[in-house]
Image 1 (tube, rainbow, N blue to C red):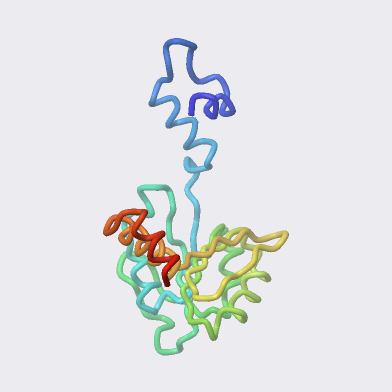
Image 2 (image 1 turned 90 degrees about the vertical axis):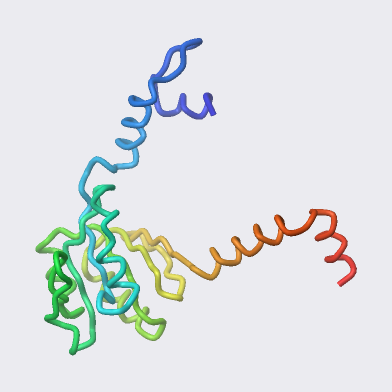
Amino acid sequence: MRKDLTYLGELGRRGVGYSVKKLRDHIVKILGLKTIRKIGIIGAAGRLGTALAMYAGFEKRNFKVYALFDSNPNSIGSELPGIGVIEPIDELEKIVSERKIEILVVCVPVSSVKSVFEKIKKSGVKAVLNFAPFKLISTDDICVQNVDFTTELEALSYKLRMSETEVGDVNENLISD
C-alpha cells in the first residue's frame, strides 16, 4: 500500500508516515470530487429514476441533479419536490448544453436503451451511468459505467454460500455434481 501511495506524489515522510487529512484531500482532488458534477436522470418518472433523483447522498459527494427526463407524456411537466420538473427526452440535447450536464444516469427499460443512447451520443455529454438491463459500450467521446444489479446479487450469493460451508465442501460438491 505504501508503495502505491508514492504514485500520488510526495505526501508523507519516510519513517513518519502520512497525514491522513492531506492524503484524503489529495485523493479527492485526483478523483475530481472537489468539483460539483452536474447530472441528469433519464427515466426519472420510473421507480428507480425517482429514487435516484430523491437520493440526498449525491450532494454530500458533490453530485447535483440538474435535469430530469422521461418519455412518458403523463409524467412530463410533473415535479419531483426539491429536485425539478420532468422534461421530455426530446429536449435532452438542448438541456444538456444549456445546463452543462456532465453525467447522465440511465434508468429506462431495455426496450428504450438503444434509442436513448442515440440521443445521449448527440447531446455532447461525456459520461453515462447505466442502470438499464442492457450493457452500453463506451465510445471515443462517452465513458459508460454499467451497473448490473443481478451481477451484484450473484456476488453476494457467492459470499453467502462461502460463509455457509467450508471451502472443501464446496469443491467436493462441484466435483460430485
